[in-house]
Image (cartoon, rainbow, N blue to C red; front, top):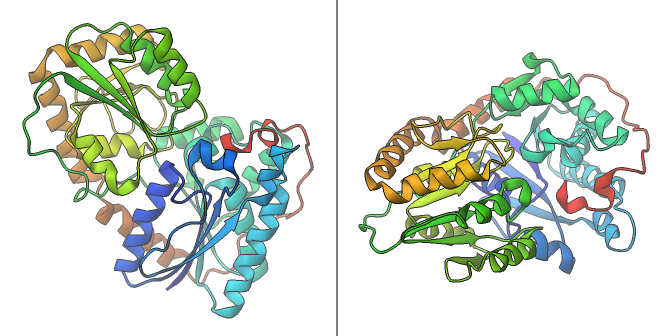
Length: 407
């Protein structure tokens, strides 16, 4: 089968989307599919500084096409032009199909990539699969009428809409009214061979890891505030980059935690398994996820986890069973959970063992990759998405036009 996979962010960008994409691509190649990936990327210094960026690297067995987000980069001097980038994506998909026809189009993210792919599917008469992930499902569509209409048309007209779990689907339903039966549940997944527990017994201070996008929406500032309440022998690492990196550094200095909390900076994906293995606890006090890749990686790496009762987390973690969960923003309870794990090594081991066993049973990429390949087989040959109007109303007041990197 020939598949066109359209990604909003791919390496060197730091994002759960990048991790999801590389593992899915590897699965499709292993199943002998012919895959072309079209990936957007930021080429400007600001964009690269926030998430990482630049042209996507080669992927063995995959044709990789990078499209610089020139329209989004217009935000550096005015307002982001999402429509320019959407037109470029549509033209690229159509040109690649003309040279060597696709069987299925699969977009990662509903807007702008899903919207562009839906338009291309209509033009080419091809089925479209869309994965709803992260902030795409949480807030895109609540920002302006342009994006609301785009999300509604993607959700209502794509041949298959994939989403991480019922909790996340219900949030999208409550916000945009998409019928629950439109969603196909495909959980997040992790490479359980690359991510595995350390075989070295820990020693010294209890080591806490925050890894991922350094973004207040992921709870990084709450994490620092919780650390300020901790006692005993501990150290912490904040690994990654993101829009709130400087704010996080300022807060560490404000609490005089420079000797306790280190910033690891950009982490190449090949180095990430070793980063997990160098720690004892994982902290993810996030406000919302699609399906958290970092939590799955921590589960596979044998770490005890402190997180929140949040969409995209509660689908894989249960309080006091395979993790410790608080309400998002409850810094005092997050600190109490971290203190409990610092003080009680037997409790750390119990929670970590439970999480590891579930991760290997349920969230391996062998299982999830097979689910997605089966969905492609089901929609193949079904023709274009159901009819929709490709013209959107123009709402210039969208907050993401000023800060498109937050979309």
